[in-house]
Image (tube, rainbow, N blue to C red; front, side, top):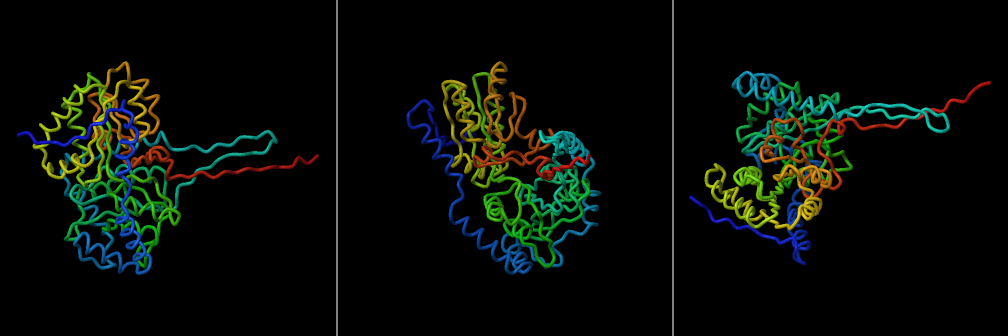
Length: 409
């Protein structure tokens, strides 16, 4: 069964192409109704504290919690780990090993030296005292986000790590999330999600101590909440609804490219962006046909199609130099290069704003999102122009130091 797919096509050689691309990207800007709603919730949490938090948990998640029982008990973490199938725990441990190995390489190092005046100067890095980690839950709890935030906080040596994640309507948090937290050694976990979680982290309450910096991805509402509390607390970046861009020439596997576009559209919030940059109409048509063929096989195909209808843009370029220009303007969260191997080196060199780059037909975004080791907590909405991925250095800010000693004769 084939579905009818609406695809916007942009010819990048046309005079209006830059303006059209800018207009498409502008659709990611948070509308005023979300901005206003987030501001009202944050202010309510700031003023009423715990009472507001549990009211919004009930409203948005359907869970009837009391301020005293928002925190997950330690025994629930260990019990979830015991319930998890051995195969899942084994996969989790393998992914965690990759995450730790990759991120240890990015930890900043202290240094000292002497300037031209003979003064001792240097830089020291200290872990942030208390960090708050947001882990999306809902229909698809992101166990991988636990690995890619909590593990980094532990590697950096943060003394206090508080994790916030939404529960289901019964107040239960997915076993996979709790097991991952237990595996990493996290003990402070709150079954609170959404804007109210960001507010609780920023402002604190009688039962929740405020944090110094907030990390983690989220939907348009939680991303906007992070933007609004910045300054009261630090934030890692603004990782909102997912994005992927695939640059494809005629060597690309159409079926693989289509699967990767669908994998990101499948997040299904309705605000995801999916870009296909093709060097010919032939490859664009081939990948689009594969998207139409594979879409009905997905379990979340209705939500996925809504994302594609609203947020799928195909861009035809004459040269890979034009593809570089497109990528650097969009600054996509995920960028896949499905091109001839001879073209890869120049593209990796010249594309400077992508959050993460996956190279080759057999390197799907999903691999980086779950098991390869690099972080999937990446800037979206063109924020890759000035933010980087969430790395270990984000948990360990630096401090300058200098010392001048007068010589005594």
